[in-house]
Amino acid sequence: MSIPLLTAIQRRTNYNQSVSDDLHAFSNVLFWAILFSTTFKGHTVEEDEWRAKLRGHHDSRQAAQAEIVKLFNPPLDSDESDDFYDDSNSEEHMTSEEMIKAKEMRAKIAEEEIKAAEDEARARGMSELLIALHPVLKDWTAVLASRTARPNKPALGLEGGLRQQILAVQSVLSFAEILLRHRGRLEAFT
Image (cartoon, rainbow, N blue to C red; front, side, top):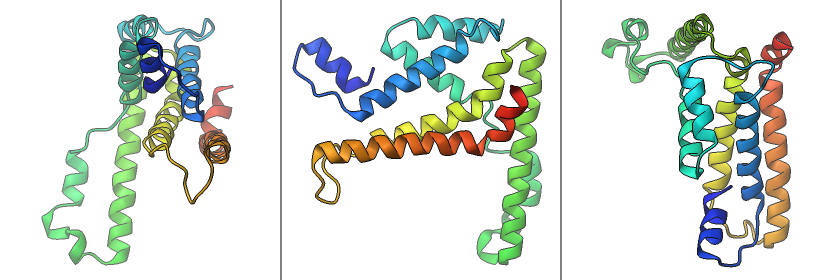
């Protein structure tokens, strides 16, 4: 459940459920389905801890989701990228081609670091489902954060109900875009 909905329940006040609440529920179900899959259940200490947290209260569920999303994040200060992208090559002194090359190099290094982390997780016995769907979880969490961070007021003079409908459609489209973005990874998994 979303924090505003939980707060209303705790305070026993009226609350009009919104699309944002539904997005939070969808996110919770997505994480739950991946971690509790009986077909692809992993057997690492982290997964057991995340399952316990997902069974807990809202704060522990949120903590588990945040830990999972950060699971394969590459470090921000990679030695290899620093060798290529040092102070003598600061962006203000780089041509557009050099900037593109630097961006591609950082992306390649990050991709290699993520792959190495995924391979290490596989070696420890982590769920293939979690490893395969991690990018989907990460991207969806970012969409959810951006959708719920917006003030809950009509945009462009739209009435609340219409705004909620537009937010719902945008969110469904965003999730479809995420699935398309990771289509190759998802198809390789099935």
